[in-house]
Picture 1 (spheres, rainbow, N blue to C red):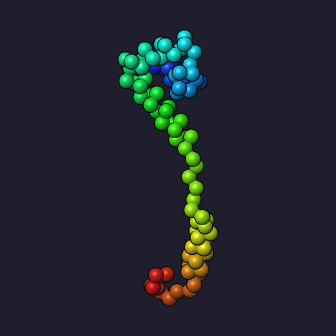
Picture 2 (cartoon, rainbow, N blue to C red):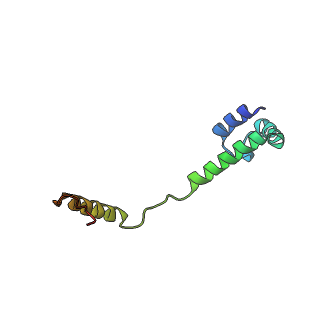
Picture 3 (cartoon, rainbow, N blue to C red):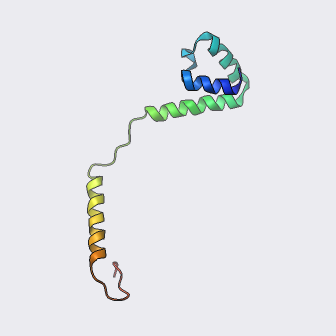
Length: 90
């Protein structure tokens, strides 16, 4: 087995080698014992799986309302007439 075939098998069978058929798992384990590239691919697949399995990140309660309110204030500030050289912060 080479690294390319190993990568294809990870994509098809997943990163848990214990679930692979023996005729694929044994050569994969042999490749892992000698190939840093295969080890890196397996670690990358495991990291990706953990990231995908993690709970979704939720915005704090009321965040969307605060953003809309801040945008409305900015719009109101920019609509006020200014004298020459005056800025919204003035």
